[in-house]
Image 1 (tube, rainbow, N blue to C red):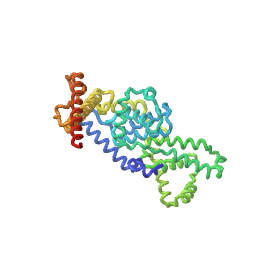
Image 2: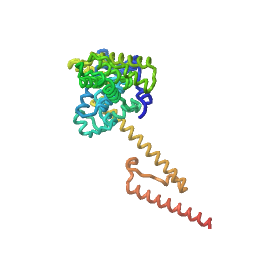
Image 3: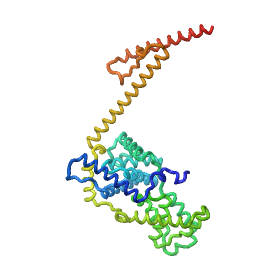
Image 4: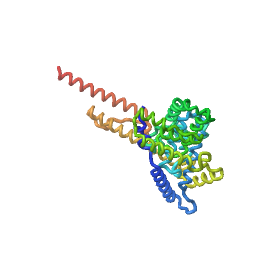
Amino acid sequence: MAHFEDTTQAKYWLFTLEQVKEIRTKCNQEASNRFRERVNSTEIEPVKLEEEAKLRRIYEIKIQKYSEKLGLPEKAQATAVTLFKRYFLRTSVMEADLSSISITCLYLASKIEEYYIPFKDFVAIVETSLTAEQLLSFEMDIMQRLEFCISCYHPYLSFSALWSLLEESWWNTQGKEKEGVDKKKLYYYARSLIHKSLLTDVMFFLTPGQIALGILSFAFSHFHLSFPLDLLLSLKKEKNGGDEENWLSSWKQCIAELKREMSTCGGLHSWNIPLEEERQQLVNKLALCIDPQVDPTRPEYLELMKKKEEDKEMKRLEKNLAFTERRKREFAMITGIGEGAFQVLNEDDVEGVDSKDGMKQTEEIQQESSSVISDEEMKKKRKRK
């Protein structure tokens, strides 16, 4: 298994807080400018940066709910949310359909994490009108936007390792159960924090191991327990002999990042989820601001898809024509007969030509070619004799 430092997540998807703010601000400004060019109206304002965050959160929660309905394992759920957050890090909600992208991220995550769901069952559960062709089209769009960096690493494995370590080396020896702390409650509370942390941007700032360590420390403080940092430090020295001061600094950074992210937008329980009235207002505003060419329910989108299919068909015909021309040149070089003698008749590419006549002409050319080649071989044999 590769070290996390060598993964695409570590190389391309870890940022500072300032970098994330800068990327999103720039993206929103560019999308707002394109919106103003597209809509000549001073009455309609583009979606603001704060409103984009609320809209994203609505659909992140939807992904988690649909994941539970589909029975996806934790890792697949986390991958779906991660793909969604990566996509909208550099894409404004005004230039992509939130619903279609969220559903496609779910389906793509089930493939990445090898959890097979038949398409018919998937569509029935998530209640979407997307066709298989549309879903595949959105899949390709997501992978291209993410530059095919779709491997996702989550804190679950690191959390399990840390918890096992605490159980073996600290919990049983310290007799914490006698102090009135339920070990199961602590475990499930900490585990739920990983699930909730997916709604924050902490995945862009910390490694999975740092997130797991920070969440455990966060959970311990919630139950008024002091985190056994000295135990982890002693074990780290035995295994790696690392610098204690740097490690402590990293640990403090994890806690600070987690506390900030966990407390953003309303705290652990509200998560800044808009009320129904505000949610409807945001959705209505987005419907006015979104580029109609990215919304599958708009005629502009259907026209764009039709044009893409036509362009695709044109490229196919051009490719076939180039292939035919190459075959004609090869035929002329081998047989010494002019290129005009070779014709490849294709019912899809050539109109007004009877297929039977085409087959006859092709057979005649093949016979003529074989006779010419056989004559050449006979001449060679005579020269050898």
